[in-house]
Image (cartoon, rainbow over all chains, first blue to last red; front, side):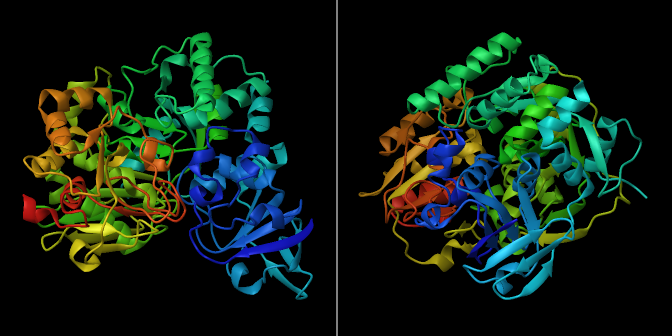
Length: 162
Length: 420
């Protein structure tokens, strides 16, 4: 899993910044993706190529519970968000969608905007191909592994219901 | 070793005697609340995964509020879809126009919040309902679909933080000032993943509405929930609003907390959270002369009758300053009617404010009071993030209803004590 890092080093990037509420009259991923991060960085959607990563500080995804934030980022091409830490509801929403929220304290300090990264999920590390460094990340909690393995929460529930 | 109220409620809902922080538990959910924005995606998921019926339609309460009355064709389509779905599912508790309101004000008012319950909603401010001694937390749309399908939801049992609010609340200082002060002290992720339990003589003396304001903003410190142990005022409120049976839980004296903080509010002054985080808290005095374009009174945080009364007390016989507009949005239909009976609507209109029908509307930058670039609003709501109420170049200052009303009169951010 390789891609370019888009680094937003600040803490507390909230879901209003990820997808402003004025666009919540739609839940279509492609429509939401057009406005991803626009109040923070108006050029975001033009910069991102499919498979890229966001790298950020503490408490990424705080604020509103809108799962639209996950869909907007995924729709814009983001494969994973790497952050020092995540807000609770956003983290759950990522896991439930099988979208990668990777906790790696200090990542936003070490990784430069535009660095090429490879995420190694098996060994739990982020390889910075540009800087030739590697960083270990926090393993996913057990419940998250189960949900991701099932392909998302609804897949897991559907299997359990049958 | 004792248990906290949160641990007791979660244990009772997963069939265990005891649970410990960090454990994963699959809990029965007593009430699932649905609003307009996050429910349509959940309905789509249920359809995609061919889950034809919700687990129990009697546990589902639908309260469209964000873009209601419909702000545009797309939001009208969303609510129309939810209406059709509710009918097909046999969900009877649907609060449509005429009975509508901001869901976190409406849910307790209509008697769906009782002590000891588990409550979830696809909305981060669900933590409000901990004010009545329930475990209530916000979830996303997939979690909502899962709960609708199974009646259960997984939680990691949170650690609890204890906030002991002591002293005597000075005149002109309110529940909103207390919770802003706490968020200012611990930061917007100071309670991440944890339950915030509030107690102390000041909490005991607060009205149930004031307690709701406090628990409502637990999420602004990153909390999973806010909660207050039930007491006589809780039970009085619940009996007046609900006919449900319930079980009251209390934290044990030897319950374990990840931390305990005592906050003496005796010397407190009215505060505001300046842009762009709820934790940027300063006293009104410290912010100096800050002119405002708009004053907004409403929301799940501070749109209840008590909030309207205190604002009306300040606005009575006064007028909103020139070049300033004031919007009053009673949080529910019943609150609107009560305000009308008490003459508060007249006071607001005579003062030059305007009063709208209940909606979340402008609080989240939806409609009915959006800010232009360069505009500044003082607001009784809960978030002052970039672009929260409109243009990303606008500013929101968070404050109590009294400070909002005082600022509307002065045309700049102002201490309410001079008008009381």
